[in-house]
Amino acid sequence: MPPILYYGVPSGCSFGSIVALEWSGLPYRLVRVEMPQMIHAPAYLAINPVGETPALLTARGEVLAESLAILNHIGANAIASGIAFAQGTREFDELNRMLAFLNTTFFSAFASLWHLLEHESDEHEKAALTAYGRARVERAHAQLERMLGDKPWLLGEHRTLADAYFIGIARWTKYHAVVDRRDYPNLQRLYDKLEADPAVIFAHAIEQQTPAVSGGGFAGEIGLEEALGFKRVA
Image (cartoon, rainbow, N blue to C red; front, side, top):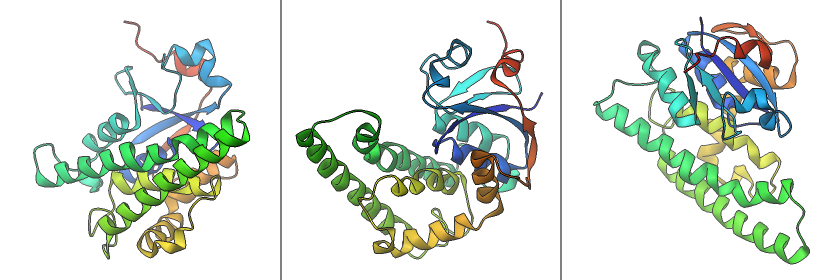
């Protein structure tokens, strides 16, 4: 059985896992999870009790949650693709360092801004959370801008899981007008290159439910209830 990725829409960070699967060449299936309504459904809570996306049902029928764990699982099975590295190597450590930064700093910088979109706030709270979010997003962009420098990809000469994860998060600026990516020319250059990548174009089409052409091992979408039938019962 190919692994099954549960991806969240609209604009979930699971986008990066779709891109990584496309780059890996591994066979896989997808399950669409409409947020927020479907993440609270019993069928999805049976997959991930935390009620968040993404989640991955592995080829063994076991559930794996959290983007970093899923990306590393994909990478461990696709070393030959060049998007990941063998554990214990310097390259593996560098990849994990970058993934950790993207998760703990770049991703989390948007937290207060997402809160504003998803919850009602009075004007005082809105102003405070916006200022706080803007400062964090600006700082994260400036840090990543320096880390990238003039390298073609986040880790150097070749694309990796880090680039896949980055593009899924970087697009969130369209919801939160607190930075202009053009002020960070290195990040803008990387963003533009990724947006032209066939795997990223495919992932956008999947989210938008428009015709999607896979260059990897995509084996089709299935429904949430159908996917439950593949889950191993403990």
